[in-house]
Image (cartoon, rainbow, N blue to C red; front, side, top):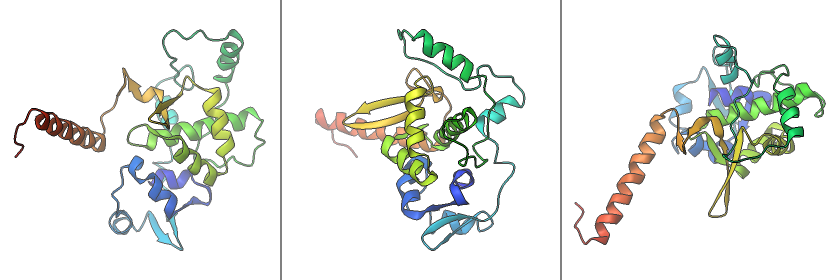
Length: 222
C-alpha cells in the first residue's frame, strides 16, 4: 500500500479507488479502521483520500531495480510469449531495440515528458509492471487497472502498453471479464512465488469444492 502511494500522483489516492483495489492488494474490508491507524507514520486518511505521510527510500526500489543490483538482466523486462506464436520480424526488431532503452524508475514522476518519447514510454511500462507486481495475484481486472491509470493520468498510455507488450502483459477473458495478467508471475498457469493471502484463498476454494462434491454424493458435511 505504501509503494502504491509513492507511485500515485501527489502521493494520495481517493478512498473509493483504494476500496476498488483492496481485494487485489490483499487488504481487509475495514483497512481504514485497522491497517491505517496502525501505521500513522506512513499514511493517513484525510478529506476522502488515503495520503502518504512519509516517503520510504528503502521501499522506493522497483522489482527491476532490485534485480539489477546483483544481476545484469538482458533483456531489461522479462518477456515470454504464448507457445506457437509467430512473431512479426518488424515487431521483434523493434522490441529488441526497445529493451535496450534506459530504465526509468516508476517512483520518479515523469508524467510531464512527451508521451511519444522513448524515455516516457519505458517509464510508463515500468509503472504498469511495478503496479501489477504489487497485487497479490499478479493480475487485476482490466477496468480496475485502467481506473487506477486514470488517477495517474496514464489511462490511454496503459492501454497502449498492454497492446505493445503482449510478452509482458497477458489479457485473459473469462465469463465476460477481461483480466490483465503479469506473465512473469506465472509458470504453467500457477503463481511462481507463493503469497500467504493467495494460499488462504486457494484453500477456501478447495474447501468449497470439496463441500460441493460431498453434497453431490449425498454425504453429510459436518
